[in-house]
Amino acid sequence: MNKKMLDILACPMCKHHPLESFELDLKNEIIEEGALFCVSCSRFYPIIDEIPIMLPDELRNKKQDLEFLKKNKDSLPEKITAHGVPWHL
Ligand SMILES: [Zn+2]
Image 1 (tube, rainbow, N blue to C red):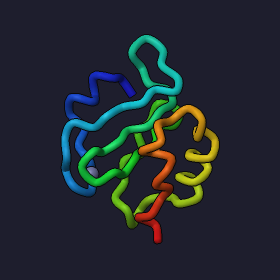
Image 2: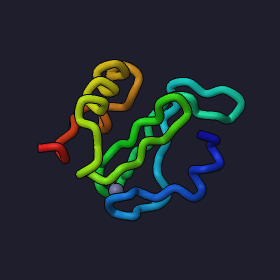
Image 3: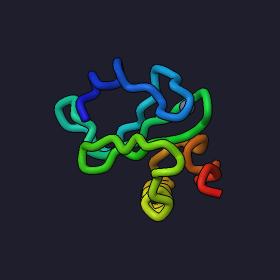
C-alpha cells in the first residue's frame, strides 16, 4: 500500500484514525510488508504483499495473524507482538 493511504485508513473495529504504521519492507513510499496499529483498541493489521488486511474480528484469519507475528516478532514493536491476538479468543 502507498503510505499516502494512511491519511484515509481507519480502524475497522473502532473507527479510530489515524493508524500507526510500521514498515518491514518499504520501497518508494510503498509498504510491501508491515503492520498498521490502532492506538485506540490495540489491534494490529498486517500488510502482506502490499495489501493492508483490515478486517473486523469475525473475519480475521487467526492462523495468518499468528504466523505474521511469529515471523516478524523481532522487527515489530512490543505493543504489537506482546498482546498476541486476543480478539480471536
Ligand atoms: Zn481500533
